[in-house]
Length: 287
Length: 265
Image 1 (cartoon, rainbow over the protein chains, first blue to last red):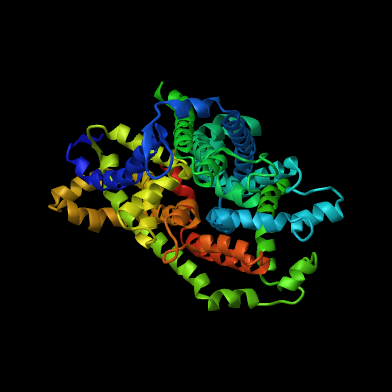
Image 2 (image 1 turned 90 degrees about the vertical axis):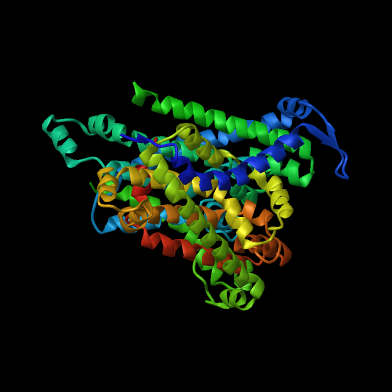
């Protein structure tokens, strides 16, 4: 049992100070911008909740938000089952395990814009390995700078390539922590493979899968660099995800007010979904 | 049984294809790249790598990245250690809320913070220094380090602390001499994840630097646009950014899987 100790605050203080410096001051700046109007020259006027109304009512924001949810939904639907399936089919011990883990973790350690550049080179229609194979060998027309569908498939494939390993690592960590006795008991009972998965492996993986889904949700919802480098949000606006649109507004057009309001709405949505998900997943544990 | 082992092999193959293409591209000459498709480099060249290692604006990018990533990892892990100890051993006012608040900082899109960060670090006079990027990356690395370390620390029985105090150890001596060696693996994993997330992040690093502390990833974007897209050079630079990660992952290979599994939730 944990003991009550108010002095523990001193141990946490450095963390609070550092994170607060980085989180609260910029957040306050954003809040400050979001309620003001500026005409340049550092002159600011009170604008109330006007920007929030504008952003929430704008079709551009709705479209970007819709694309963002679509993207996150697709990649979660692919990466989580795929990651679990691969973790299930990996050997539980032996010399191959560390090799598999190292190779699988490779994509996680590549800088995000290099991931974008790498996929760009990989998919160039005339000289990229994938682009050339599809176009010239298989005869499938593929050019992601012209077809929105090809661009979408490419950014989804890139994200699956980049992040499925995280789900694999986590699911695998959950699997190896299951004692052998569980499997022996299942064997004696004559349980089918599916029954073993449903009643032993899945419950044991629940904790790590919660973390995996949460992390994947947060990171995919905030994704910026990879699609920006790969497609630049195009063709047209077809792959302009929420953060790409935000940076366009904030740094491209330098509309600080709307950008700040958009940031706060964005942050609120991320928080809300994460919280709802977190509560739903951990509710059973408390009962 | 055979089919089962096929899945990881196919998956790893899928992972390696784009990486192979990048590596193969980096050994090709610009002429060969533009001339058309070739599966292997026809005229094997080290020109692209030579260009990077002889041009200070390129190799300083690597040095800058390494400096701020190292500073960030040291800061994150060293402030997270006592905090994680407090979360794993004590109850105190607001502890649960504090833990959730820390985690929410991982949910703030960096795109949201880019501009305010620029203004904040310009105001305190740290713009374009390594320490600025290192401090900014603390935003998402400290919560992560606390989370991982707390998991590992909760795995150490509390009797260890009590026995040490009975034996007359002071908190400081106990923490450094006994407790830290016990959670070596956890410290390694936390450091690994801090290194990883700081190394791969670009948006904040790019926003907070101009010349003196510019990261390699930002150098790449600049060169790609100004030098008329030299694909071979870009590929070589990309390959070199993979190496530090590969080295680090080799050292923690037996512990990565454990890192998150022990965490809270």
